[in-house]
Image 1 (cartoon, one colour):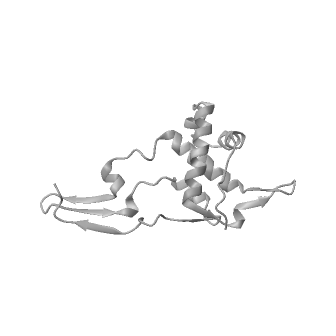
Image 2 (cartoon, rainbow, N blue to C red):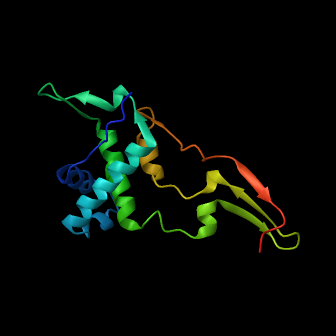
Image 3 (cartoon, rainbow, N blue to C red):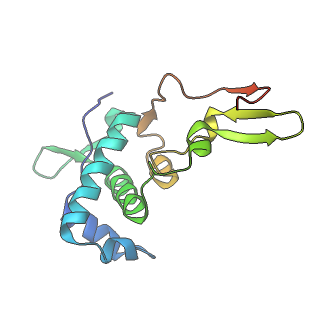
Length: 149
């Protein structure tokens, strides 16, 4: 396994999006925005996954390169980032709030419902090529009653 950061070049991403439907956020972004989205996507994916050796393949010149699905995952994450900022969500969503009862003043939180920083398409593309590494405080649910006011 490796924790090397996967990358996709602008050329890789342009080629990928030329064959993808509904890539308007990519095609309408400036070159600077595209580069920044690819860089951020690369760091977010690297921070969430540990890559298996199968994630890299031999290139014709004898070097190794990222598998096409890994490059596609970086591209999809970049597109998702261009469509919106995943770090900008409401405080209840950030906390994983899933249920509130007004009469008994209780709330239920589920960390599994916290907004993700890696899009679902990227996670699916990486299946079998990388292992998801949740942060220590992810998962679990808890209830609080009464609500603090």
